[in-house]
Structure formats: structure tokens, C-alpha cells
Length: 387
Ligand code: SOE
Image (cartoon, rainbow, N blue to C red; front, side, top):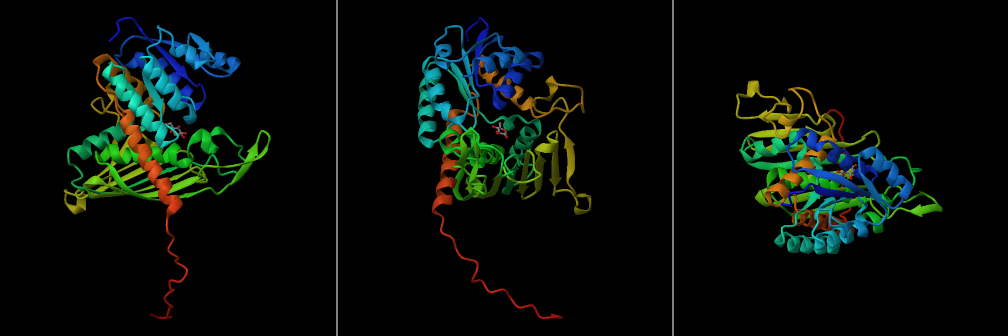
């Protein structure tokens, strides 16, 4: 690894740019990571990016990402820009020898994700690292869940339920954004949040999705745009059933119109000798049921994942002093920097991101081609009073 401080540039300063910038800003205060400098923040609007850079601790700004990728003092490119820009920036950066972290989903299309993965494989031969940003892998409670599953504490995993529900699009008058156009976002709830659920299902179990059925719906088909009404070209909600290796079945629900649900990611894992449940709204907690203890003692018990020997927790506060959503991005940067220091391949890799993209594409294909069996003709049994 290069000795001098690593030069970092982040591209994008909206929601994800802010979350990543915060992580770059505080990671070295808590973790022993290689020395780096927050050099450049890149954005298309010169005034907006200057304001963001001043707030988030970036030394300089630029409006053209290409000029930044060419710089010798930049070693890491963190891509927080919308999905339609991922492939072009990531491939150019990898070819220029920069380590790349890219927000999920990896790309908008399978073809883009494949091209990015090829570029990452080539770059890896030259010691250049790449990582796909599924930050929920770094929730300590979910990292603990993975450890418990790997240790066999749940026995054989049979099925999983995962639901990621939000409501920021419930109001039909909520305006158009890049997240609602297929050409800029790739898909809607599917790529944005079902991708997290799918990543968790595979990561927690160590198994791979091999088959899917999918359903997708756009409930609000038009929304106000800057120049009048615009058509929404992505899904508001998506559902899938998944078959995985290891004979595991899973269901996934994702919605951005689940009125009242702000950012609810719930995961339930059912095994032959135990179960785990997790709710992002209480992200410091993991519920564990061990069915090997006598039945009269059984029940879900709450593990407060705040002990120094829980994943990532030693670096933070004394026991019981809980952490939040933003810490997952700090953990992600920590793991990325340590992989660069040790020359290990960071995970999730672009290959992992591509595999999730394949699952997303399969769900979309299934949703578009599904054969619908009419339930209308199913006779409703007559109720007999007193029966
Ligand atoms: C980031 O991990 C992210 O997936 C965002 O991109 C989504 O929009 C957010 O709502 C959940 O978190």
C-alpha cells in the first residue's frame, strides 16, 4: 500500500454523499485505519457542492469527475452519485488505478454491472480494490446474526421473511425525482431497497438465490415534475419469493408507499432449532429464540448488541450506549480502508453486487412475464349456521 496519506474523492453530495461524508469524517476517530485525506467532493452544481464540502469536511470541490480521476493525489473514489452514473465512473476510476467504493445497487442494468465487474477483476490483478456498498452488512446486530447462523445456533435454516417498507412516496403529489425514472434509477423499490433485503438473505445464510418469482406494482403512475406531469417508470413496490441453495425459501417485500412505515427493515430467520428476528427501527437489538431449551423456558430474548465483543462495538461507547444508522457507513469505510491496507479483497465485491443485480433482473422478468391464475372462479364454501 502507498505510504503517504491516501487521497479520497467522493462523487455526489445528496443523501448518500452526506452519509458517506459523515463516515469519512469520523472513521479515524474510532478505528485504526490507514491515514487518508478528504480531498475532493464532486458535484455538478458548483455552489451546492461548495456548501456541502465546507459542511462535510472536504478540502476542495470539482464539478467534473473526470478531472478528479486523472489526479495523481487521488487514490480512492467513493461513488455516491445516482445509479445511471455508476458504471461509467467506476470503470474509468478502476482503469485509472483508483480503489472504488460504489453505493448499491451496483448499477442500473445487468449489462452495466457485468462491465463493472470485468473492470474490477482486471483492476484487482493490479492491486486495485473495489467494493459494493451494502451498508446493512455492517449493522452489528446483523453481523452477530450471521455469526450465530454460521455457528449452527439455529440448526438448519428453513425460511426467511424480509420486508423493507418506507412511505416517502405515499402522497400521490410527491414530486418526480431521478429515483422514479427507469433511465436514471434502473428500478424503484426493487433496486433501492429490496436489494438490501436480498443481500441480507444471502449474506446471513451464506447461500445463493437460484430461483425467483416476482410481482411489481406502480400505484401512482404520474407525478408532478418541474415541467408538468411526468410518467413514473419504476415500481412503487415489489414482492418476490426466492429459492436458495441449501433448500432455503425466502419472501421479500419492498415498498415506498407503505403508509406509516418510515424506514422499516424487518428480517425473520427460521431454523430447525432456533429463530432470529431483527427490526432496523431497533437496530441495536437482535431477538433470539433457542428451541433446544425446555419448552417452558422458551421465548424470544432480546440481545442488546452493545457489548465490546459484539462486531464493531469495541470501538464505540461503553456498554449499552447505543449506536445508529449512520454508524453502518462508518463501519463500511473502516472495512474498505482495512482491505486496502492489507491488500485483501473487500466484501461485498462487485461480483457480489452483480449477483444481486441478476436476482433483481430475474424478479423483474418474472413480474413482467408471470402467468396469472385467476382466483375469481374458486368457489367460496357456503357457511351453515350452527356448523
Ligand atoms: C442506502 O443504503 C439506502 O439504500 C438508500 O440508498 C435508500 O434510498 C435508503 O432509503 C435506504 O438506504
